Length: 321
Image (tube, rainbow, N blue to C red):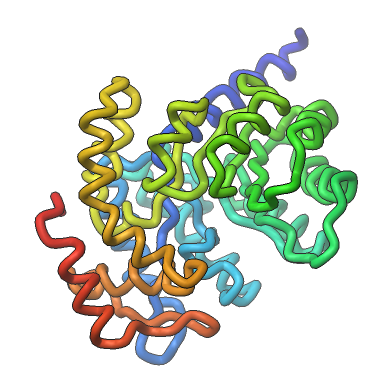
């Protein structure tokens, strides 16, 4: 093994460990004029880091990735890296976010995704998450080609495909892993535990870090079947709840994990209703109840009606916040 290979192996080892955790997806707060509220965003990040969150995904779906402009996605990425101390010229490296892992969401057409991946590298990110391709016609081989071009453009970065396609086969993921050593994890967001178990084993249970991409409601069964991390939007609202679930799963304490699952179920079901129509809206409404940011979202999402706003407030009563 060359010195360079050894360096990259150790580098990605740290990234793999960061994925085997709560992977927080921060919301993107908007100011009254509709622009990104940079101050509120950084405050929310610091709240996550102060609570013990060590891995974040700026430009994720809970951050309204597809509703942000290219400039805004770059801005969110740079603000996040500034809070971890990795951004150029930052003075915040001694804060609670120092050294936290940043997994930047990239996607859209290939040139846009590659440009975003290179920007993430330039501003100090260690990993990228590649959003599920939105093209209506996705072949198994084409999926590999799409991710390979992005991964090859940033060989220094850890790469994590975001998989929502229920027909994608484990052997397809295995092939991508063979071609791209820097593809180190998979965010699996297909709501089918049996399918997850089969795909993970066909792809390589130990080759990739498997992250349950459907948050806390699916974290418990997916963990039992091989996932070692899970994503979370709920963590924006109650970091202690998400981190407590992680700790219970790591300890194999499924009784405690089940109690947490029962506690958060009403909130997460509000998010999942109507094919997740209010996924982000519910989180932002809860943050507004706590006085942490405005509840505005961008189309095609929409602010909740009063009846549902009351349900959100009721759902988070009694949480450790």
